[in-house]
Length: 421
Image 1 (tube, rainbow, N blue to C red):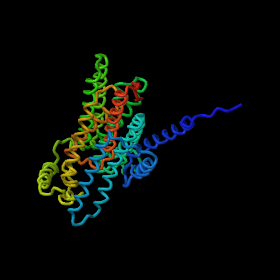
Image 2: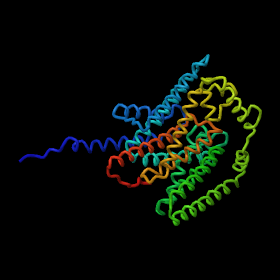
Image 3: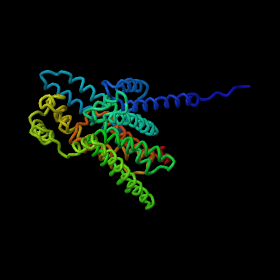
Image 4: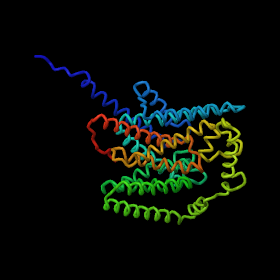
């Protein structure tokens, strides 16, 4: 009697599947850590440094589909290195550029692993939602004063969760809020209560951050999501469902805000923060005048003036991502950054409504990225970890589309099984 021997590929297939699952779970854990950035370097950076290094050794594949992302991010950071050369005293600026380069690598990493396995999108989004809800709760409870030692999760009387700045905390919550909103509009009633609870927590977190950029970002992206879904869905019944649920959700959010405004502390801060132009915006050498000064300075300093120098020179940072690129990364960095953003937005728009398993993730990521481009005119999104994750998601979905089209051309059989929400 002879025993059957499995072929080598079949023998190792279970081990490979287990390793792939473990790798995906580690990625999800890394995304989860992005919601806790009280100190720097944060656990997110430390964990991803190790994870990316291990992945690079054991088979991280960078395809031609994400080559523009790689090249333009590298050129962007080369511009920052040239900018350092203009400084008499470099101070800590090499570390600043090192962080910029690392964050660029995280974007490339996320794009590559999404292209390798589209199922990682589900884990990434769910891990992001979990982190956002926890950090939002920390911010809300800290702001309301019901959490012992909760003042560590607030700053300037505003909720900031496990972040260093309310203006980063608020925008961080927008992607998972849209993900839960999309689930409400397309999912089953069975899962609706949990999604409603999560969405209310995230919306309150954004509200209590008292960040005008976050308020605007959430409002703009919610409108864009509903508008995009109305265009994509062709049935009248589904469109009616979207409109009715959107109206109900809007009324509930407005009601929650009205209740919150009954408290004097909240109402006073809201009335102050709700002003479109603050005193530090329109005053002499205020935000808007500094923008004008900075763009004029860029004409005389093609290599930039050095990372962080603008803030030291004028007492406040640029608060404008385009000006930030000019001042800290020079014209080389600015042109590469604008090219990358334009390329990303054009590609995302081209494939936004195609019926693909990853289409909801592309749509949500793309819409939130557009929102970040808009608020980038009044706030500096450089070094925002979730911004680089957004770029990785959009480019990863684009790479999946390119692979899909290649298989179509080759005549391979395709399966349109959607990813779980």
